[in-house]
Length: 437
Image (spheres, rainbow, N blue to C red):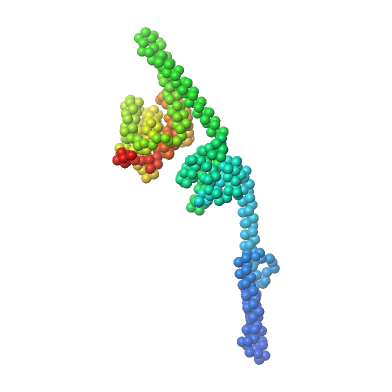
């Protein structure tokens, strides 16, 4: 840098030196200086114009560079240009690799702009969604992939759960669509479509099998129970037969409970969409459930209710009663005598809350993620002794999904467990409003 400054000063002072020498020879200094300064001014003007063109047209600078400050400026610009070229090459390589990876993905990938028009799609989108890129660039997503529920799902902006559809262009196909907002202010959307046809058909087979098997088992169990009950009540039954008969009847009733829960789950899975939406008198239902829970407990548990008696819920009454009773009865079955059980029903800033909390032994953290799985038990022996079927929380999960609600479970070993069901705030109704519906 110092060398460049010295060179620039030399170029600037040279006309002054020449002018001074000519002035000593008797030539007028001003004219001599101006004439001598012209090459320097033209030099500076040339490089200013070159710099302006360089910035405007982004020409590539090629050595050699002039001496002085302009040489330093050009060398700095050349370095930045070289870095920019390397960065662009890296971006091009990364973009090419991304495209290659996206093209290799078996799932359909579609990028939508804020107007929900197609900006890009991978080849799998042509097979699964009938979207061909770039031919369909700028087309509305919901005009190409058509389904009665799709437009509302895309425009609603609530993408917590995927949407499973059979698109009109291929009714034999079952697609699971998941949408993720991204970009500036989350205005763009990435749509991922996965072919779940095989999984869907396997689930249908499983559901049909469970439903049919449960129906077929229900009748013989009813017959067995029908024979066992009069045998136990008959005075002629030998005393040494009563214990095995009692155990047989108990196990029969347990099997009937499991079958009833399996049938309930099958009904919930077969009819995934809510049909009837009516105001449910949740406070009245909770008071009845607690009375049943007290009978189940035999008066050995302490119940504390914090219930908003004027708060109702829009939903399906039998399903909600099943979910709430399962949570409350579980608190009775899986906690020792003397445990305090607290029941809440109230409005919150985030929605309508139903919660059941006990002061029992709690649940270890590794069990919490799997509690809603069918037949999953934290303590198998204790669960069977308590009369649980292992399906209660699975039923709760399905009912809440059908009511757009979320289940959260918080527990620490030795500090009890809290089950919270949060319903959308728009499902809550004040009693006086519900009477007008």
